[in-house]
Length: 113
Length: 111
View 1 (cartoon, chains in turn blue, brown):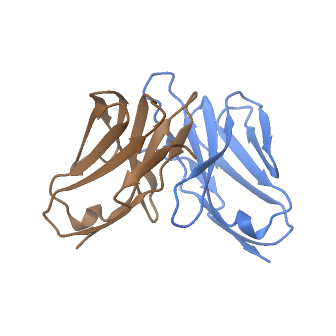
View 2 (spheres, chains in turn cyan, blue):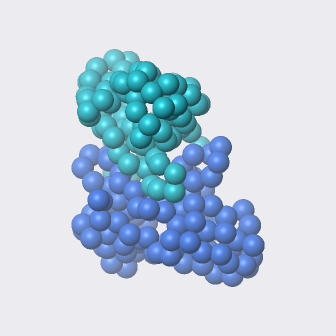
């Protein structure tokens, strides 16, 4: 099935550093979602984006819906140890009623205290 | 808390046995989903439901069936479990727009 191209695949950073990750596709999307998954738990929705060019923040997290509608970006400022986990992007490109999402493979983030 | 529970949380079963996983929601949402998560493959949709008795296949539906006789419950059945179905299974509900909220997962091991 189709997947989103999510990069980088993994990151190892020092506490306090800023983090950037992105998600791209060859198709146009109507919705972009960013999730975080902690070990042994289900993914948790961080930010939802619905409009091209939209920039939305959630605490130290900021996500943007790319102006071309083919990409999205997530930034984490001043990272802390609890930011450790896997970050997934997901997109929805159909206007129909099935509401199925297309997923990236995730970015694994490790933070060195 | 998205009001989603999954049961069991862990299960070990033998090849060839039937297995049913349950997803229960307390919020009366129309859309429900079953995913499996495996290393290197991310989240893959098995089946989804858009209402009571309304279900459709996802990208990895072979070997799985689902049922939704009540709004609050979405059941995933492995008719005859195989080792390739060893995985972590997540249920999700669909809320506003296209947002999905996930349950805690079921870790299934087929020996």
